[in-house]
Length: 143
Image 1 (tube, rainbow, N blue to C red):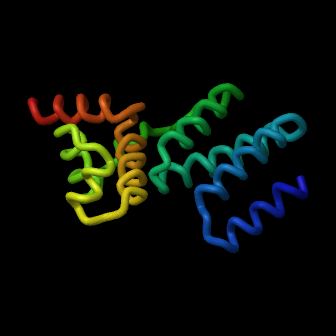
Image 2 (cartoon, helix red, strand yellow):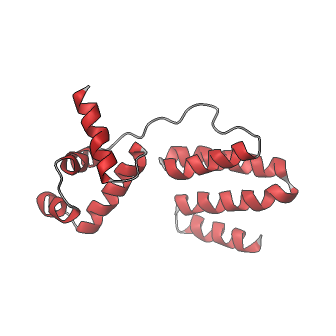
């Protein structure tokens, strides 16, 4: 438990909320063996925080863990991630078939920044890859 507490203290000090939430979820897994009600309470708090962060993949993992404990996942469905204006722009360029390097050159941003935005778009849309993101966007555009 000491390692989890140290990690939580450092992640909090460094203002890393996603890492803090992930650590708290792992702590809940450990607590489940001896203190199931505390583990469920911790996992529910983590789930709420992950939803607020927009970390839908991690939130889905927390909800699945809660369900595996018989505690139910979310009390209300997760809202679809709302794309920022820049993410919408990136998605539009993905639909057109641009690579990360081409998007970076076109928008005058770094390749690493493009990769971050693409990852965020995939996460928020709940898709696995660029092709699925493009198909998703195409379906929305045609409705």
